[in-house]
Length: 170
Image (cartoon, rainbow, N blue to C red; front, side):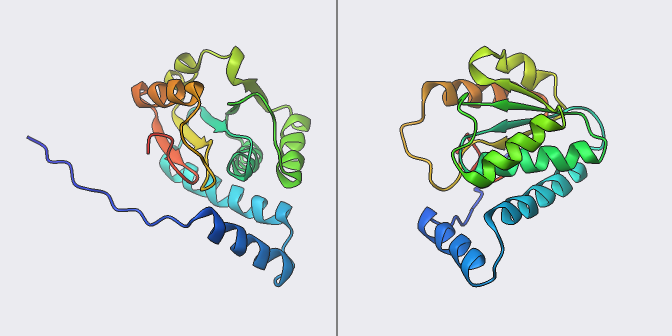
């Protein structure tokens, strides 16, 4: 019989993340666009360690977490990886930095599907790695029904899973 061990995670609050981002932008003069770009490169590096071949599916939310997913998609595409993105809430991006990365993905002709028009179970099942870039520290409960459906599909998928910030299942 296998015993499940408790996994302890330390999470920063949305207030701490906002203050950290503001400090980077104001004091260190790093733009929001560049912060997202750096995050995307780090996500792409981790994704490549987890998955040497096959399609990578990125599930992107509408905030900065989703923006990190779009930046990761660009980087993985530039590295020659097969990438597909699902805009989970069909709303694009709320932030200026996120909008810029989304538009760059479109200009690179990276395939972007909308959550409402997509068979999530099929897409997750046919991927080698799923990158969950849906929710960050600003998530509010209860989750929308579509997020519950996506969490179930991710759980059923044989693909490896990687969360940019908060795993949807948490």
